[in-house]
Length: 306
Image: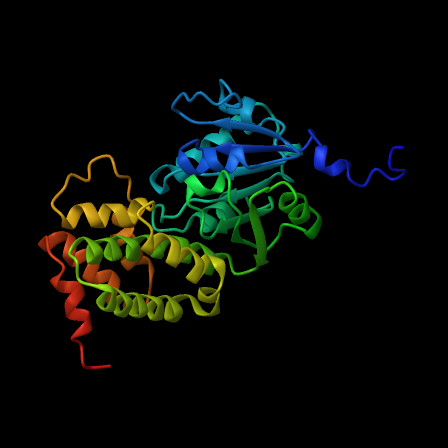
């Protein structure tokens, strides 16, 4: 007999549409684990995903939520393309309730992705999701992440939670802290890959990791203790599945890093410009990339001024 109130129908609501913009490894993995909704995707590169649409507007035209999963250098242009498509079709009057959520982990034109969302979409619900999300594992394994938002209401958050089959979301209002965690840990992961590639040992790695976490704590505060902080740091800095770790490992071995997309390497200068506090480990990793060695990282362990 059908349930009188049909309160479980939300799990099968195909009117709930999640659009994934950026169908790289993470975007594809996110799309694959969504449930109880219609999934549409868009990328400038043609993929074999059945949910990829021919045009950007087809992907977003009836979206309930839009996931932005694009590299940082393309974030601002991708967002403006979405805005342009809605404007060209005269839709802004009825899409101000669309949720925009960024997964991008980089700095764009001197601003964090969440700051660009606030500037460009002042009337839309916006947020950022970050945490330990290695794309290969999201398809089959459970993980946790942080959803940071200041204006997505509780009903919309619940609707999103029940449709994320393999990602358990915890909610915070610290949008800047969660975003910064996702950006800066990629840089540390490059350094951790260097340490392993140079066979410096677990003690050295643990000491440098501790200093990096202390840096993050000074920059970010208590959000460091969340899945977006320590959780994502451990996954990215200790797993060979991490592209940033792999970049550092292969680079210090003298192997080619061509084809390894590293947000950490791409964002070092932007992070140093953006952050108002001193970041010795980030600076040391930058020096390593320029001097082709790990001595700058080792030098941070010999600093007796602390």
